[in-house]
Image (cartoon, rainbow, N blue to C red; front, side, top):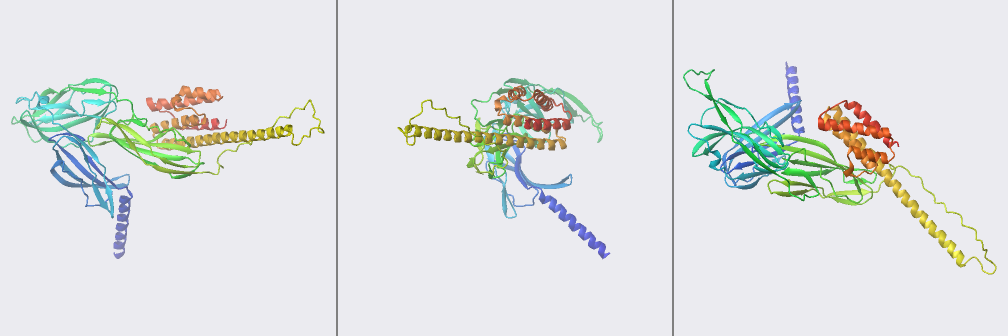
Length: 573
């Protein structure tokens, strides 16, 4: 019996240790979030501080003096286990009342864990004037319920995130509702928002108090400039009827028909000119960069990654182009992470870009990457600068570079003099002829040395470019193979396309502006590449294009082998 108890205690302690290790192995996260980023004066909103994968009771909330605390703080905790991974979170929630109009920055909050202070993000909240009463005409004593379409922005820019809310205002009980003809939102990229947290409220309209509840949210991203009208939407309401026949299980209802208002959205173009580092992002963004290592040799490449987070349209946010840095060869950046998720009443995006630089001289660089976006809060372009990041480049051994044969300069034989000199009357040594010949030989020797040095430098540069181009191609192929094993077709075809085009671009020095399939094929032909290889490149790229933009996925394994053979054959030329 005693042995059984000992074994039970041992198993319990082991299990507890494993669970604790699993919990703390997860990264600790601490952040602020809100259910809305835009509210009206007099409305309430939720502010929540969330701590994940850590235990703490000393959370310090930010200064909230610009708002009135209506409720809170209330605390909640949760534990989840997904695929054997355990995570836990604790949250502090407040209900705040917006008092005055303005753009407010809330945060950061702070928490101390094991003598280390962690700070949260900062939230920006836009408080606007309360809606005017005339916007709610149509309510009377005989029509006590209405459903409205409310839009976060009636005037917006291309790529700006717009929230359309279906909002119920009622002074009576409702059993259910049906939206009969929702708009298609042509010229907009529309995404239903499924996981939003907006608390019920009471709102006074036309001198009467109504219960307000958001029924549905749709996120819109404008794709074209213009004026657009949507709606109205026809709605059927099921209203309970107390006629004495209803019971706990069955309730009589009557159906009423109503319709929403119409929406008008004006989409404007972005102002010009845009900064050189403009990424296409419209909204509110943050950016940070990391460098793989700070000291490299001229035989190595440098990897810099840029992580961008924000609320813009992920499809149009691209890696910003960097200005050319003398002594650093740059490659077309690749996207290694692209995620979107619901947060509050917005869709958030995370994109991570990878830049590969190849130094060709030993020196010290101070790199300050930039990311520019158009801010919908300030109405102008904003630029985020990261760094400076110090990069120390030392001269490499040169062993990784292909060897080049030393060219020899052969001097042509001197012509015989048809009029020999009488050496007895005019000695050759010390004569003007002697000095002329010696000076000519000296000048030709200097020219030969200069010529050889130039040839050697060009050969070394060509070798470095060729070597780095195949290295980058192999890295992209490795990532493509990883995505293939994960059955991530979208990322696979994108990475395979980067592998081929990036390799050819660097090997044959094709500029970025000429990277269409046809222009690359023409460049290959002008570089005396065999027609069958050129046709193979076009065939592979066409399949990648069909997959990326038309969703036509074929044999990934076979296409991967074809791309690998193409690069190896081209490299062997």
